[in-house]
Length: 127
Image (tube, rainbow, N blue to C red; front, side, top):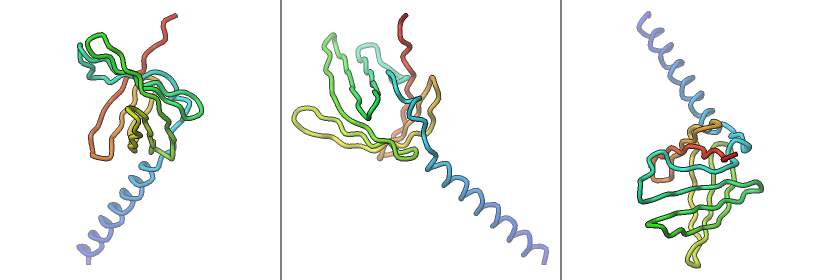
């Protein structure tokens, strides 16, 4: 009897943890914290990438390689902790959905649809 009761309690705990994890997946992101310029935390010397999130769902991506900068415009839309991106370049539109795993005033961690995780650091405005 104790074994059955113990197994039942374990099942209830696992089910409760799964519900809590699902709630975290749909956690609403504070869009105000997203606004600003971000760069990957693992930036390479010869490659500089800056993503800027602006109000009203606008974004721009600047990539500088060997002194040449390409700028890509796009849009974003938040839905819970999911961010739908649409970037236009070369006459084509590229879409991606990111899951925001963490968003603070200084750091953002994301995971793309293929499971690749990336961390970004906020770029402070120079005063």
